[in-house]
Image 1 (spheres, one colour):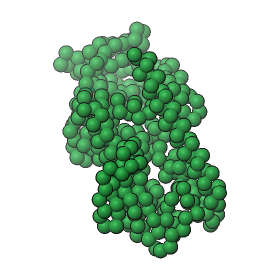
Image 2 (spheres, rainbow, N blue to C red; image 1 turned 60 degrees about the vertical axis):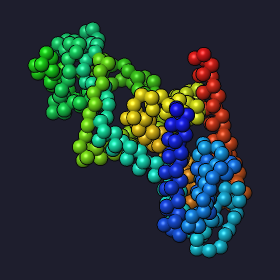
Image 3 (cartoon, rainbow, N blue to C red; image 1 turned 180 degrees about the vertical axis):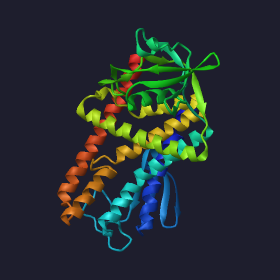
Image 4 (cartoon, rainbow, N blue to C red; image 1 turned 30 degrees about the vertical axis):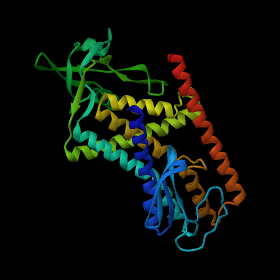
Length: 352
């Protein structure tokens, strides 16, 4: 069942991505010969309104084949106003960007659905207090539930940390204890900590840890729009930073996961809950959008860079340069895929 869920989720993500390219191409009058989910041997196809819609044997991606665009033939020129290569560079950029943009829109829709159905998060309930910390000195206790900090209403544990780090000076904590609300004034201190990338940082802290309690928060439609926007932007920034830290060597290459890891994560999420499945699907959709915008020649981001170059210099890159850079891009992508699979297999054997 997990494998089927993985294939369905991946197919939906690929379909939405390619649909973005397809709709933008058709908007500018570009003919699309093929819309494919998967690569390799064709399993099923149907010709409809000038496009062959198909499922292929290897379901790990997809593509739209437009008239006048072929990475294996950079010098290809197909005449006619319905040819991709005859469109203006800014139009081609929109066609290329439309795929990743569709993934961001899908993620926002999924986050909106999560907010309406009920987003789960850690409760703002204290599970542990560090000895001699500002929280202990102020009088906070285990099982205290933090309701408000200054004028900020607290619904999740994450909001506690965000409020503490984004404010200055002493803070007023409004806490529920034994069905009574008590107020405590706490002055956070600067302590050593780690961020999500395990980098050493210093930040304002009061010395508390969460209790293992989950809260479900349901948002109104207006609140859900804000939630969806914030989560999509937050996820995008996290992935961009992750790529940056990987390039800098802060995140080791052993952390790169392949298709096996993705499949396992989706499978585990589907077995956990429907909300968990929606959440991981939204995150992977953002991931797909961000990674496709990287300036690697074989990706949408690389092709966007070629068109920006054409806008600036008013000439296209030479066929030879285009071909060499595209091959280099495929080598980079192939190497990353192989590394991901290698890491996946290593994890399986290490656990075994």
